Amino acid sequence: MFLESISLLRILPCLAEPGKTIVIGKPDRPLTVVIPFLAALRDAINATWEHRHQLKPATDKKQAPRHLDVFALLPQTNCRQCGEATCLAFAVNLILGNRLLEECIPLQRDAAYNERRATLEAML
Image 1: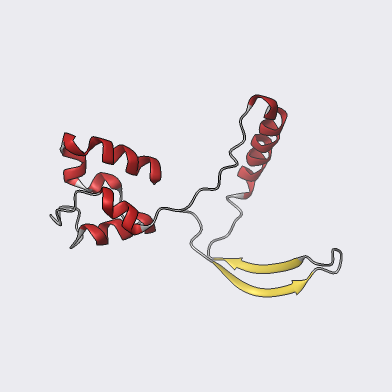
Image 2: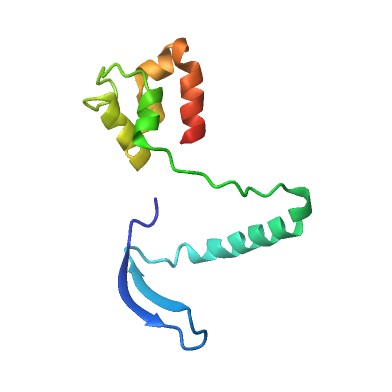
């Protein structure tokens, strides 16, 4: 992850466009190395727009997975091979991005969990 946080410095009303707000923040790292990539992002957005008639828009709202939903699909052996004390703790850390699904050894090695693993991969 490039950017961990942005410190909020000020919030001002936009005088040019009433109803809008100006937010001023300071990133925890300089953005100078990211700026050149924004042009590529602009080009990707424009290319997507130009080919929009060939694409199916994704309009379905997706809900972020809940830790209990993830936990229900884990082996629930509390084997600790992932480094967590319980499968529930592992589920929470998966959602927070602190753990990888591959760290659940039983899920990776036992073919009985193949369908559960595929569902988790799609969720996460």
